[in-house]
Length: 367
Image (cartoon, rainbow, N blue to C red; front, side, top):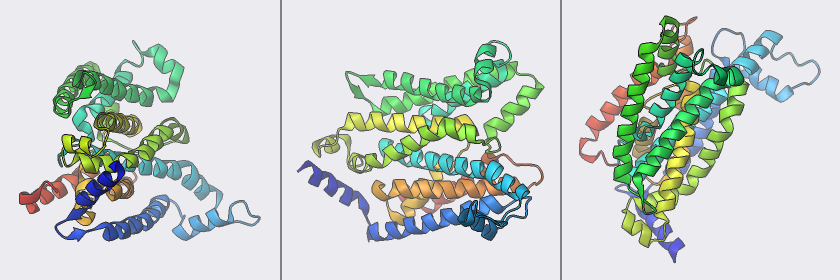
C-alpha cells in the first residue's frame, strides 16, 4: 500500500496544467543525451589545434590500430591530456551543481533554493582561501604533505564541516527542521564569508590574484589527478540522488502527508543534505565558485517537462553538464589566447535568463 501511495503522489506531481508530461520528459532526456555527446565533441575540438570532431571519433574507433593517423602526436596530447580531463570535470561539476539545485528546491519546496543556500559553497571557499593565504605559513605542513591536492581537500573539508555544524544546529530529538536549517545555513554562510574576508585582507598581491581567479570559477586546472580525487565523490552523490525522487515528489504535498504515504522524511532530509554537500563541496574544491547553474537549470526544465523529480533529476544532470561545457568553450575562446573565468560566463548568461523567467512567470513562480 505504501508503494502504491508513493506512486500516486509521484503521479500527482507529474501532472501539470497541461496534463501528464512524462512522455515529453523522456523525449527531452533523449535529446539531452544526444546534445551532451555533441557538446563533448565540440569542447574537445574547439581551440588551437587541428583536431576535428571526425578525427577525434576516428581516433577513438581505431585506437592503437596500426597505421592510425587520425590525430598526430601533438593533437593527441592536446585532446587526451589537456582537453579530455577538462571535459570530464566539466560534465561532473555541471551535473553535480544542477542536480543539487533540483534536490534543494524539492527539499525546501522553494524554487529559489540553491546549493549555496545552506552554506556549503561558502564553507568550501573558506577552506580553499585558507590554503591559498596560509599555505606557506600556518598550513605549511598540510600543503607540503598533500601538494596539489591540498587546495581541493581543504575546500571539501570546509564544505563538509559546514554541513555537520548545520545538521547539528537544525536537528532536535532526532528531527531536522527545514526552516531552522535554512536560517542556520544563511548564518553559517555569512560567518564563512566574514572569515574569508579576513583572510583576503591578509593576502599579498600574488595571493589576491589567485583568490580572484579561483573565486570566479574555472576548469583550467583540470587534471587526471584532480578527477581521481573528487570524481568518485561526485559520482556517488549523483548516483544516490535519483533514489530521492519519489520522496521529493511526496514531500511537495507537505511533510505530514509524505509521512502518511510511508516516506521516511527524516532520512530523506539527511540523505539529501549529505548528497548535496558532497557533490557541491567536491565541485567547488576543484573549480571554484560557479553560480546560477543550480538555480537556472531546474527552472528551465520544469517549464519543459514539469516538476516530477523522477525525470527532473536526470534531465538536470544532462542539461547542467551541457551548459557548463558550453560556458567553458566560450570562456576558452572568447578572449583567446587568454581565458575568461567560467563563473563570469555563467553569471552573464544566467542572471538575465533567471530574471526573464521571474518576469515572464510572475504569477506562477512556484512551478
